[in-house]
Length: 120
Length: 120
DNA sequence: GCAGCTACCTAGGTATACTAAGTAGCTGCG
DNA sequence: CGCAGCTACTTAGTATACCTAGGTAGCTGC
Image (cartoon, rainbow over the protein chains, first blue to last red):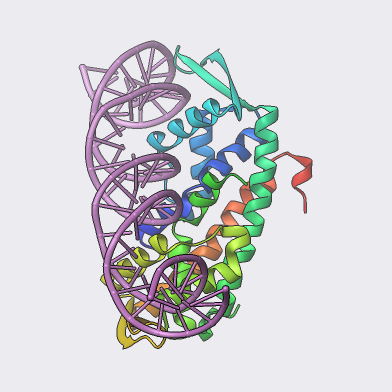
C-alpha cells in the first residue's frame, strides 16, 4: 500500500493507540516506539521518534497523560514514565467508543460499493 | 466526541468512502454530499462542499475517477458525473484490503489496553 | 576507537480536511 | 415582483497531524 495512504489513515488513531499503550502500564517514549514497531510495523510502517515524542507532549498538554521522570539504567540519562490521568481514561474510553462507531460507518460504505471482490 | 478527533479519523478514509460511492454508480458532487450526510452525518459530521469537491479533483488528477459533463435539469447549469477508472477500481480494492488489516491492527491495541470497560 | 544501543528533542515539509466565502439559475411563496 | 431556498460547482486561507532528517548524550562490546 502506498505510504501516503498509510500515513493518512493513521491520523487520529495513532494518538488513541499511544493512549492504549500508556493505559496498559506505566511506560516511556522509547518503549512505546519499540512496542509500536513490534506489533504494528507490518501495517503501520515503522514509527519514528519524530512521530511519537510530539504526540506524547500533545497528550500531556491536554492533561490526558502525566509524566514522572526517573534515571535511565542504560545510559546515565533519564526516562520519562507516562501514565493516564483520570481525564485520559475518560477520553480513551470515548475515543474507543467513537472508533467502533466510526469503523461500522466506514464499513457500511464499503459494503454497499458494487465491486464483487469486496464481499468477505 | 470532540470534532477535532472526528476530523483526524476521517483522513484517508473519506477518500476511500468517496471511491466507494462512485463505484456503486455514476454520480456527481452534490449527490455524493447528500448521500454522505444521509448515511454518515451522525458519526462523521456534516460533509461540506469545500471538503468533497477538492477530493474529487484530487481523485481525478490521480486518474482514479473520470468525469463526464452533462446539463443539470434543476438549475440550467451543469453536472459532472464521475465514474471509476480501471486504476480506480484496483486502488479501491487495495484500499479496502488495507483498511481491513488496519482496523484489525488498531483493534489489537485496544484489546490489550487494560481498561475493563473496553471489553465488548 | 568506533559501532550500536538506549533515550530524548526539534525544525521544517507535506498532505488532508475545514471554514467561509462566491457564482449562477431555477422554483415557489406571499 | 422580490426573496428565500434549492441545485450545483469553485476556491482561498487555516489548522493539524504525521514524516524526514537531523541533533544530544552516555553506555557496552569488539
